[in-house]
Length: 523
Image (cartoon, rainbow, N blue to C red):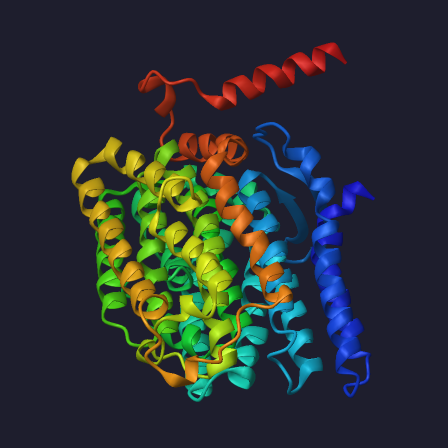
């Protein structure tokens, strides 16, 4: 059974979707129990993955590989390393909590709502475990469908506009990715006389491709991934989608879907086209866009009157840190960028859950309609404060670890990169503290808030795992860095051969190779 664990993981929510669709739509309570049950089961079936990542591992684990469409060389090819592992864990946890948080708020078309969420969960998990580029593209595109309907049916007043904008932006980027994918695919046939979409096969094409060709192919991939991240100036779909989506939709968008862009960079775009990723223009352009996104997102957040929109724009700023770390092309930058993606998933999901809780009670997101909530909602205020400080990067919480590691990686390359990015930390604290002061502190200024109720047990339990994750990574991040160490070193060596020896650093891959040889000799 363990040799098919990856298939079991992504098929579990898909089976849950079919189970929900078979239930009578009138029995909403049963539908909720079944959907949440499969979400919990989806977490439990990931437990066997732990044994593959107890120590840093440079190889893909739990590999499954069979022919799918032999005539074009497409395979059902799955496998995970540290990058995929942390994203799968994040997906099953955030996916479960997003499904659970809609227990009371979703009353119309309940059956379809949970079916779309489970379908979306299966698609996201597939993205983080496929090693066949064609299959990656299939999963990438499939996810557009359920997310479009989640926003378009259960969203706010401008939900159709937001859903269409989200769909068209992502689809446009996907076309560029497809063109790059097909180019490297046919280049492989030309060079080796065989059709294949396997990642390691297509990576060999780089040795026979000019730097100019790699440059354009990388940017074809990069634009599609930058739209999904989203990076400035490809971000304009995000505030609308976040604002109009239901709370669970915003949580899954911020927690998982945006991370697919980061994952696509380290898994496919950068390894496939190393010369394109390390080209001077590429590095400088992505650095500039990242820093502009960090500062711009923070400044625009300061101007927002809708606090859900404020949290949405904060994602542009926080994810600018992630892309800055990745393009530093060194171990600290790449590991910090990926870890900060996880951190953003935890803290921003918390913030969107917090917004959804008061919106369900007051049906308004205007910051001016609140004030003094700490007088009536003390538990809510404490949990919101944790989310706020985690997002602002306070020591002891997860955001600090990711931002510090990214700034260290950026500093190793150029001190001005780190200095400009650090401005975003100050601005981030400003807009979050401003929001907290306006909403939570002082007297109750709106009579309609006099009778507002504090969080119930279910709402506390939904937020508790995310709060625990923020403290765990903030206080003890070592396991995360151990998981990321080997795949990060592997990517750095792919982009810059000899990086570790040239800088007098120990290469984790050498240590892993020695231990592997010792194990084989012992056996």
